[in-house]
Image 1 (tube, helix red, strand yellow):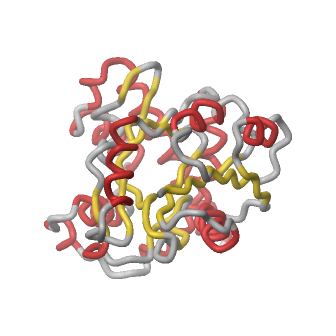
Image 2 (cartoon, helix red, strand yellow):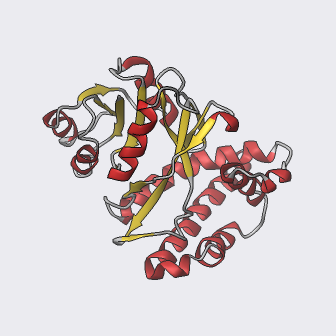
Length: 272
């Protein structure tokens, strides 16, 4: 009842674990962005169909899959290669897909960030949600910052109880920083665009956690000392210290990422 899309770029090391977690699906599509390692061979060896498309954005990749993969099933799950579907999440997805009529056309899912062998329950901002599961005719995305957002309004989005596991550091800290240096440029452009828009502080009081998080992000984007504030928020206010040394290290990495963004904002202002 469920097809699966996995986005890849040089993910030969991560892909076997991800594919094993969705072995229950008979329609797995790997959308590759031009890997130079054995990603494609690994995918084919596990019985996945492979499509290739040069990467432009996460929304562009996911929408391309939705429009060109020719899925066998009416429900589709989107994954990255460093993510894992747990048995409990699989059961929840199957129950929705097998229901006579689902309550929502798309569903959002939280992710447990795993760092240094530990789930970052606090510093990892759990639960932060993304829409990744839905009917093939409804699941579409738009670009936002370095990631993507759904096209549906909040009242049309369901929330899954069970989370994904996200092995965000499986390629090492150097890879994480390299990726986030690229992400910072997109976040800087988004931040400058959002600063030109009016604030909507009432979003802080929304019953929807995603709406609250997005409102807080817009407000925080206008504050001074953002790298320091991000460390305090993740490491202390969110209880990152309760995650031990991994939690404090991750909070520090988030502060460095924020500094990347701020430097690029300043660079663009000077350039303008």
